Length: 257
Image (cartoon, rainbow, N blue to C red):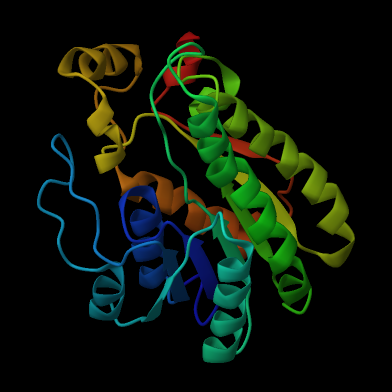
């Protein structure tokens, strides 16, 4: 168990990629706080159609310890409360995974300014808030790790004028934060997923999904577990000398761009 007894917070951990990361962390012995707006997992019309059990219940089935903390990452006070409760409950913090994110479809003319603010508020501002507030706790850890979940869209357009720019900014934030925290032995890295089979894909049409598969080099879409295993590696001692990096976990999607 490469994460035995290490304490992690995963934002957006009730569903999708966050849930996948949480379950892989649990398999590796971590103690996990799930920070999300709701405990009930999302169910999609294409993927994750039968997911019903809360993530903490699945963590406990794996023999690990978990706690759910209702959190809106766009609310600074809620993020602070979640960090403090995690430290109180488990006794510290070793790993922060900023995974929570939203997507509102629409181009520059269709997307309202209010919706642009909402997407950037969660996907970029929320990441910064959690990062800023977690740093004092991570400095007290012997093996501080910070993982930001960006996207393959950080490297190209096509996901709208809010989502893609916010994810690109995360990649740059990772580099900047890695330089700041390097002297304290804290690593900061990003994972950039491609198409992952989660409920967040509901906004797509079947034709768009088929097009995404055709652009993916490997003959399948990714699963939350695929991102989870990458996150385990970056959070483990095996990645102790990797920081400021952004890892594409996209089945080769970006190779053809």
